[in-house]
Length: 120
Image (cartoon, rainbow, N blue to C red; front, side, top):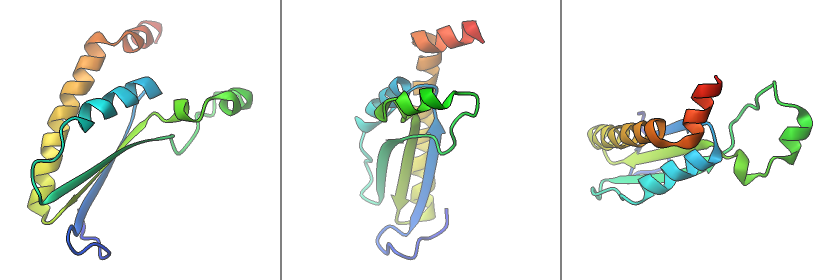
C-alpha cells in the first residue's frame, strides 16, 4: 500500500492476483464483481483476467501451445487506486468480503470444482 509517484490524484494502490482453476470460474468471478462499481469517488478499481505467469511444468508442450489464449486466462487481477491509505483499506476489505462470498458459492455449487475435489 505504498504511494505511487506517478498518480497524484490516487497515489495509493494495491494489486491482488487471484489464480482460479479455470477460465470459466475466473470469468464468472470477474462478471460478478464488475456489477458493483466503487461507491466512493475516492477509490478506483480495475478488473481483468490474465494468464498465469508460470506454466505448470507437468503439462505437455503440445497441450500448452494448443490451448486457446482466452482459455488460459485464469487469474483474476484486481487493482485498487485510492486517495488515502484508509480509503484503500476500506475498499479492499469490502472487496475481500464479496470475493469470499463468490468463492464460497463456487465451492458449494460449481460442477467443475466438485468434479476436481472428487478426482483429487
